[in-house]
Length: 159
Image (cartoon, rainbow, N blue to C red; front, side, top):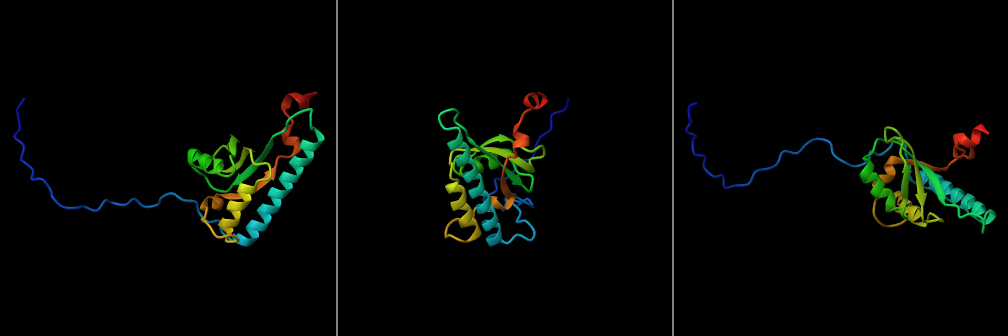
């Protein structure tokens, strides 16, 4: 095998701009969303979930310790790890189940029984309160309590 002599390359002393790739992170703003209306609707849903949870907690006081579990509707495919960390910042939301294509309903467990942190950040997102912009709300269409029919497992339903 023949040995090739390589040309000596001079050292470049200057600055070069990195090529920027198109696209990027972030959450797309949904079409036809009015932040004030979104705030009113979502806060109403959050209050309804908290009220329902209080009723269940009072009803079963001393017998069982229920947990606040509900679902969040995600309107765009999101990165699981990033979105999970984001949800955890909303009062310690823990993701229990994720929609198949990461778009759809995500089931979460909350430590914040009144959903105060969630409502506070939502108010900042919508401009009701001064603060950060929290654009991850662009990916959330709303929150729902899980219907009783969906909470009952297959084994109980068969009997």
